[in-house]
Image (cartoon, rainbow, N blue to C red):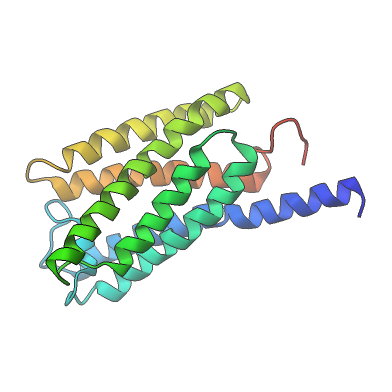
Amino acid sequence: MTQPALAASGGSSRRLLALGGIVGPVGFVAAWAAGAVLADHLSPVHDAISRLAAVGAHTRPLMTAGFVAFGLGVPMYAAALRQVVPGPAWLTATVTGLATLGVALAPLDHSSAVDSLHAALAVLGYVTLAATPLLAYRPLMSGGHRRLARLGAIAGAISGTSLLLSSVGDWSGLFQRVGLTASDVWIVASAVAILSGRLKPPNTSS
């Protein structure tokens, strides 16, 4: 296979992987947004997203599907991100996806031990999600992708601040949703940049 053909093949597989960065976050946000409408006994302002997937909740299949979509899609996207953004951002993207799969497998209200595991996985997922756009900032700036880098800095700051605020006060559900969505928006934006060919491996034109 010629070098141009290899480059084209690599670009196609990278774009296919990048689709996970759209499908995963969109599926996750759609699930908790729909769940907020269907679960009228829960408040999107006061209750955590995970309550929608708790044992016995009628929204559990919907929210579990959202967790799984994110948990599978974002590691796919991370494989594409690794090719175009040097540094550890792809690692934190992978971890946040896998942690979210763990959250789906350890629903609330199963037992005290499972609840503790759920909480640990959720924190791990939150921290690595907020870290991903921040870790991509410097490589993106160095590569000339200043708009995406700045969006990532804003998204990471909003995520980190909101997720800290979600641990205190009565508006934990709202801050959690704001924090997660901020970094989700950046993941989608960077995935679109990969799909469009604007974000490519350094020093290549593929």
